[in-house]
Amino acid sequence: MRLPSSRGPVSEAVIAALTSGTLAEVVVRPSPDPLADEDIQLSLWLLYSLHYEGLDDVDPALEWDPELIRLRRSLEGLVLDALRTRTAEVVDQVADGEAALADRIFELCDSFPGPSVARFIQREATADQFAELLVHRSIYNLRETDPQMFAMPRLPGRAQVAMAELAYDEYGGGHPDRLHSLLYARAMEQCGLVSEPGGYVDSVPATTLAVVNVMHLFALRRELAPASAGHYGVFEATSSAPSKQLASGAERLGLPDAVRDYFEEHVEADAVHEQLVLRDICGALVDHDRANEPVVLFGAASCLVVEAAAGEVLLQAWQDGRSSLREATGERVAS
Image (cartoon, rainbow, N blue to C red; front, side):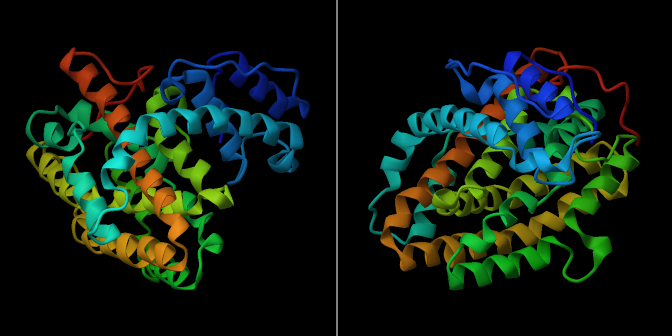
């Protein structure tokens, strides 16, 4: 992947370090909203990208450079503090309930007052707005399930088995051409969009980057593996019905078959996955150690908060009659 443009002093220092091999002294300052801070979120995205195939002309050894890891931990600290503040009341609502953990999380998903991007797409969106949605979601969907796999070795027996079962499905069920990330790439290509991971990083705002950055933050820190499971459970539990709405929107707009194929795949699959993650992964974690419950709930609430923030940016832009992207992609969706 090519290096994107910087968005402030921290990301500028990170990009310079990735090209030179040496991190200059950089001061990480508090932010009013780390989840929407362009400099913080781009810096984290760059540092997490080192754990994949890397970035163009960047030394692979920098993946574990101690100075970059130290900087990453400082940035993660700001994000974690913000998440804990914004989820505290939500977690308190469902903590120590009498119902099963999965049922409490389902109730939380149903009651959380987040925006419905999928409903807007189904009923009102233009083809260009649908294309913008594909661009935003490409930051995760072109690596679908990859972030969560970093947490898999950190899970205890029954939870790990359930995660392996889910991953088998996400990665095509033995059929490479049915990889969910590949299905998404095909949908983008048939709409005239670039399908390389990270191809639109310069175009999306901080709130979109935060969606996937939080996944990595939880999965790459062993003490937060239960939060990764809770996050993943909510991510799946809030996917099936919206996927049906998105497929309907794609049909209304006459978009290519690959677009409907991707979202229709997730209508049934995610209805199964939500049960698997919340009951067999999250439930197993709590059965293994009751101390995992508040961490699972923290991850679940964090998913709702981060997704809501990202969705609000899209809907506000579209309601104002402007693009939700930071810069024009120069492309228009093909029908």
